[in-house]
Image 1 (cartoon, rainbow, N blue to C red):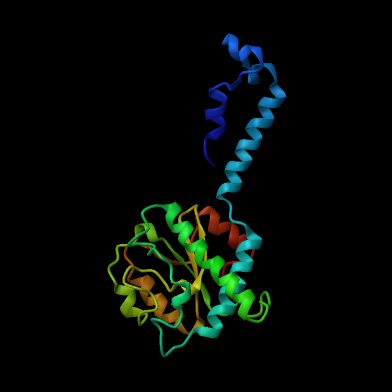
Image 2: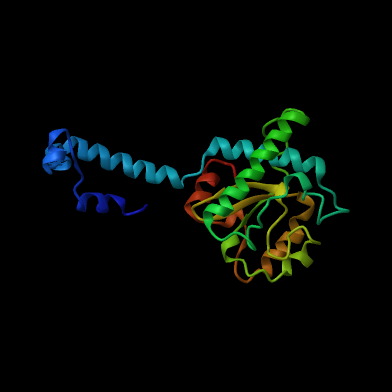
Length: 225
């Protein structure tokens, strides 16, 4: 948790009201109202925590959509491109063009939202949990990737030269800790394990092995396997 309460407590908040603004006088809000001070601190701390916490229902929905979408498109005969649909292709690459957490998060979210739109328009309604336990969830840390390309050979191109899985398989991006959650078809679990074993910088990990808070909360909710 961020040390935000210490910062707020150390610096009184003041507001200017009515004629006091013109006179240059200020009312020390925190000193005048301890209850308001406590409420303000509680609200800031709560919002700080919720900003970092993943939305469980949205994650579960995106996971269902990812599995439903990929189950129809994945092919062992085209590992490189079967889950890289041209109409979902992002404008920016997460490693090559992802210069900040914000730009990476925005890129991932656009792919997820467009996939959701296409599923609603052209596919059967997504049936939650139908094939949820098939395959595995991979945690990808794009900001520390060394782009060495080892995973490309290990997975037949499923994971690209920058250590990023295909965009059709993206489930969510968690700001804390800057991790992309992707779905791996069950047929590729062994190949991806080889990629993980050769990934010296640990930018690829099975989600169940990640201990950071955001992913841990998903595990506690039974959404990581």
